[in-house]
Structures are given as C-alpha cells and as structure tokens.
Amino acid sequence: MSNDPKRPDSPAQDRNTSLHLATLAVRGGDENHGLGNATQVPVVHSVAFGYHDVDEWQEVALLKRQGHIYGRNTNPTVAAFEEKVRLLEGAEAAVSASSGMGIISAALFAMVKPGDRVVSLKDTYGGTNVLFTEFLPRFGVEVTLCDTTDFEAIEAETAKGCRVLYLETPTNPTVKIVDIERLASAGRAVGAVVMVDNTFATPVNQNPIALGADIALHSATKFLGGHADALGGVACGPAHLIREIYHYREINGASLDPMSAYLLLRGMKTLHLRIERQNENAMRIARFLSEHPGVSKVFYPGLPEHPGHDVAARQMRGFGGMLSFMLKENTFDAVRAFLPKLRLAHRAANLGAVETIAGVPATTSHVECTAEQRAAMGIPESLVRYSVGIEDARDLMADLDQALS
Ligand SMILES: *Cc1c(COP(=O)(O)O)cnc(C)c1O
Image 1 (cartoon, rainbow, N blue to C red):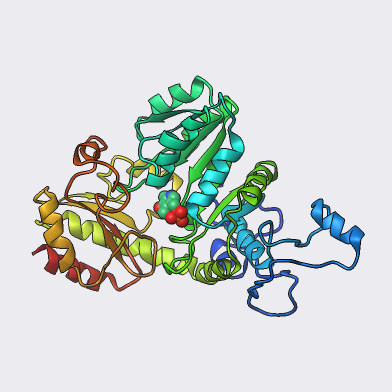
Image 2 (image 1 turned 180 degrees about the horizontal axis):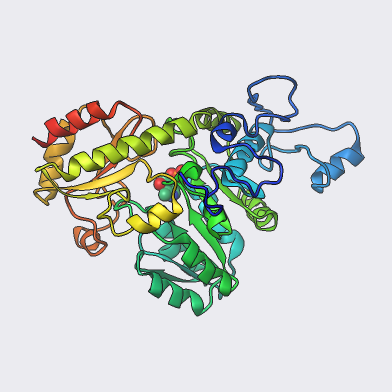
C-alpha cells in the first residue's frame, strides 16, 4: 500500500531478511529448527533436554550457546513460533507466553517496581485494564488512564514522567485509533518503555516498532493463530527488554505449550491471506451497514467519517477485520432479539478467527461493568462487535440483512 519506509511492507530493519510479509508468514522461523529435515516444525513435547557434555550444558544454561534445557524456559517448537512473529514485526527479539494476558502481564511486571508510574488508555483490553486498576496499584505502581483519543492529555501525562507508556490500537470494542508515532515520541522523550498491543491490527496491517514503539504485544489467540483453537501471547522488541520479559515469564511460569505453538505456527502460514480477505470483507460490510436502515452507527477506521481514519490511513496498511455497530433501537433488548437471528456468525467471546464472530460488550469484553459504566465509556447498549471472517462477504451481508429486518 505504501513505500513509506515507516510502514515497511517487509520489516526491512531485520538485518537478515529482505523477504516480504507474505513470504515470512509462510516460511519465517521454520528453518534451522535443529530437528532434522522435517519441512514442518516438529512438536517437541519433551520437558527436558539432556547433555552428555557438562560444559556444553552449562554454556546453554548461561545462554552462551543455543539449545534447550527445560520446557518452562525454552522449547524448539515454541522458539520457531517466536521467530516467525519476530520476523513479521521486524523486531530484534521475541518471547511468548501461554496467553495474551500471560505476555501482557509479564511485560508490565518485568518493567515496573514500586513507585513507578504507568500511563495508559481507558480503552485497553478488559484484562489489561484489570492489571491497571487492580494489580499494579497493589504493588505500589501508580497508573494513570487517559481518554483514549485525547492525545494531548496522553502527552501531558507522559511528560510528567513514567516508566511505561502502554497503548493499544485499534481498541475494543469501538475500534478507536491511537497515534503510535506521535505518542511513542512523547514516551521516548521521558525514557519510558512504549508498549503497543497490536492484536487487532496484526503485523500485516501495522508494525508498532517501525512507528517508534519499543514493544509490540499480541494475543496470538486471535488473528495470529486465526482458528480459535489455541491460546498464546507474544512480545517483540529489542533484545535487552525481551530478555527481561523472558526472565519474568520463565519464573512466573506462564510458558507457551508446544502443541499450541504448533497450532499457532500452522495458523500463521495463512496470516497474510486471511488478513487481506478480512480487511476487504470488513470494509465492504462497514459500508453496507452504514447505509442500512436498521443500523444507527458503524465504527470502522476504514470509513472516512471515523474520527481516527486519517491516523489509521497513515499508520496502517489495512484497516483490519474488526468493526462494531449500533442498532437503530439503542437498547439491550434490541441486541437480545438481533443476535440469535444471525445464522453465519458464531456468537462467542472471541475474535480474529476465520469464522465471523459476533459478540456483545455487555457479555464479553465489558461484562464486569454496569450499564452506567459502559455508557460512561462510550459503549452503547445496542453495540454489536463483529469480527469479520474469511467467508464470502456477500453471504455475510445477506445474513446481516435478514437479521436486521
Ligand atoms: C484477547 C485479547 C487479549 C488477551 O489475550 P488472551 O489470549 O485471551 O489472554 C489482549 N489484548 C487484546 C486486544 C485482545 O483482544
């Protein structure tokens, strides 16, 4: 979509590759797995890796030589998964965890100590928000949550000094857009570690590190895996920070399981194809819904009227597969009547899969909030979150049409 070096079509900052994203999604990380000539990365279930030579064993233990010792620390299948995501994000290093929350909490807890300050957004993922409001304060970390699209306020809070500036874009469920480049530079000015949850965009649509962030985080459970059959999380960034996150994760113990790593690796081979289709389907469906009489508002950054459209067009290569919309009748009863009428969408608390998934914030991402709190957060009672799959968009539009009528 662009030759702007800030939005590389391939992560050109990676010293070892000039390959493009689609190629890296298929082939990245699957060579040199050190497990014979298998063309597919083998699933290594062994918990332990033995050594005859004690000196070699010690060098591996001290990270002076490549190898594996114990499955909670590292595993060859898991390492191949981390390598594939690292290449796609154009990062120096990557480390995984057993879920998105596993890696997000490891990244945060690895960076902060009592007395530190974290600046973030009101619209982060529900679980992340609980870390900010419940757990980090318990350890003496001050957290300031800003209005997600008030970039001036975020800059001002960041300028007061913080250890971590934590961003997420696009956000859940109203698909708000945060200006990564602008805010990352505010974070760097005060020496903060800038983290971006890139789950909704995926590395196909957006590379936060190329936009100035330090760490890109993913719930691999969603688009990276793409098949709703494995949990996982991954952080990409400079080696010195990833080492700290790895160290916390190896002790915390939320390590990615090798079978899940295999399923995620397998899913990622089609990441580029899937995301291209999901971008395209979501754009068509967003246009369709915005003209539908049964819908009062559509939230999708690809629509020119979306308040974050210009920033999204600058920092993203595609607008993603997530959208949400408000029903004409803005009541929860209207949603209760609408949702069961959908025939093609799974109704579930998930997103990013090959199948289209419809959800309601009141029962999924914001289940712990009251109706008043949801309203205060700008989440209308009739909001439907729609994760667009890879089906034929014409079938999805027909399904929406019959359910709305
Ligand atoms: C799902 C999700 C998470 C948490 O990931 P899990 O794999 O469920 O732990 C974090 N961030 C975003 C944006 C998500 O959608």
